[in-house]
Image (cartoon, rainbow, N blue to C red; front, side):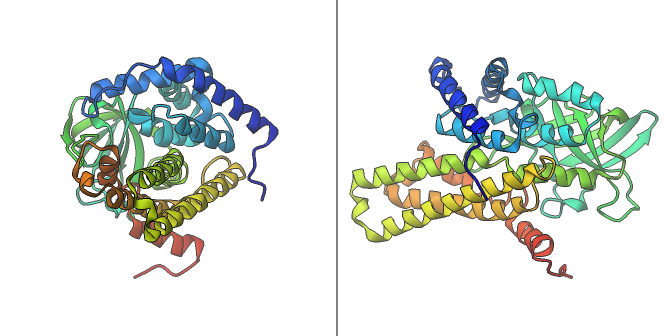
Length: 377
């Protein structure tokens, strides 16, 4: 398989790299991590800059290889992360692009691309995290609306979101995977209550969301009623298959910084540390090749990543934790300084074997859908 850039992709890479070099020095300073209204404004401002320059549509309108190049080059250049736009750009947006009607695509995609609206993800519940199909948030039909009651937890960016990609149970009598529906819920609807959750790292990008007879138009349903599990698999394929691409590049950059720090503080003379960093380097190079393979597969599958994304997610989650464990060892006493970026990233990395589907769930997917093993009882 040829994983090198095509001439067209090489031209795009060079043009993007040149534009980033000119644009990034002109950006305003980033707001503090705890200032989510400020971070929303900053993240949407960056998205608008991309839109005005003609780069905003790479997530949906371009080929998967161009998306990969975009994520790779923006991360290498130190461009702002999608931040508050994560769900809209990398989860909900691609799902609507793949599964929505023409009217839904026209309504929801342009505001995300222009940096005007933020989405959050309303999937997990207190009793339905790893076992997402056990969700109990109920929605019943009342004329042209669904009436929704229940609660969600770990709802990413709910406190600054305009819309929520929401999973609800519309047929409680159906088998667990058959009675679920995917809705787009306005976060300013009456009956929506958001309670931010503070993480171990001190940030509050997650929230509990309580829904008390919230009315959501039937026109906001993506896919058919009770077909939401299939639509959800499309969402999760993007979340696990391509949403972490930029983070792999970031980890490779941090690994290089660890080597520089080890030479500075004398730890480079430790052969065990060098072997550890060398193994991490090999692992992240392999993950990058796996990412390229997944993208190539997506190009032949209509742009939607396949189940290979679960292989990537499973190994990347562990590799990220190993990287920041090595960083903590290298820092020594400084590893207790929560203001150090590597320390903050280490705390964040602890969630990666849980977020976007636990490692246990990913192993089940790999076993059943790739290896063809029988389902556990």
